[in-house]
Image (cartoon, rainbow, N blue to C red):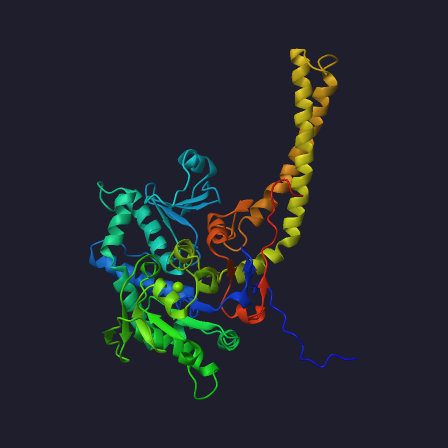
Length: 477
Ligand SMILES: [Mg+2]
């Protein structure tokens, strides 16, 4: 008998829902979405270029020597950390050990790096460290690095240190205002900045038709939200419907993380100009609201945190606080994954070759250690191998050393090539050397699942049972 059902859709490479903590999508009754860089993706370089130009102009007005500077695409990535004490940008591993450092726009040599960070772990609860949480922080990081160089050259006056520099840049920029101004520009030419995803509207319709209630919870203002959502969705929806029909509730001006940590009041957006009316009893009809908080949403939906999934791109305001405080299920959007997975896949043969060489080296090193112990016992005259001639042991150790050195000559260039996969400065986003990056360990801790974009829910279907892989521990082989 032939199967007459339509062919099933395969998930394209890099477009999976990757699971840290087992999640049955059928048990999820409501899904909240962030908008910027979650439902609506922007061309990062174009947007950051613009943001950078704005910073530069603002700093120029405040008398900073910023002439001749230009935005450096690819210079910074999400998940890096600014060390405001030493004027560096660093990449740390999951334990907080610093693995790579840029001072200004130059990479620090290994010895200098060790000198600076031998006793220092990155601790994000300390205000010395500034974590680059979103794409919005990249232009600022570039500007800081460039001004660190100007400070080193003596162009900023003798009284300023790296930490003052950071504080002062922050102070001369009203970031909220900057974002507002950029967004006003963006409304006038969305084609230039917004990267539309034709698969996205259908993925949301699938979720909605499966009985889940969809919510939009964004910090953006109503006028911007409306323009972006219309641009990204309406052309792909059936005639006579709009993005508004997808969502049970729209909350703009949500002021996350306060939305999750506090109890701000809720307003109703009364007209398209954004006029607000107090809304005392909580949301009642399918409308557009401003402000409010997570408890109110749980109450309105009659659901508990474990039945609500929140999807966003900001590790702290979207994912960490919603998980920590409300135990909502969480999904992090990591757009960079698609390129990163493809590049790591391409580098797979080299990675395998490196793994083989490293395994060989480990065997030789273990042998060296055994021979050294025999030498020690011989020299000091104790234990079962405490007597006999010394020369055979010396000879064996020398031969082992030669073989290890030969292996190291093969390993070094291979490791160097692999360490710049996906970003020439920083290497892969989710790895720091051989280990997980600081970013990856936070993703693991706070995001139940992570994926490159929201439309990937369409490939997984609303009925997916996502299982976390069994954890690998050092003794598992
Ligand atoms: Mg966002």
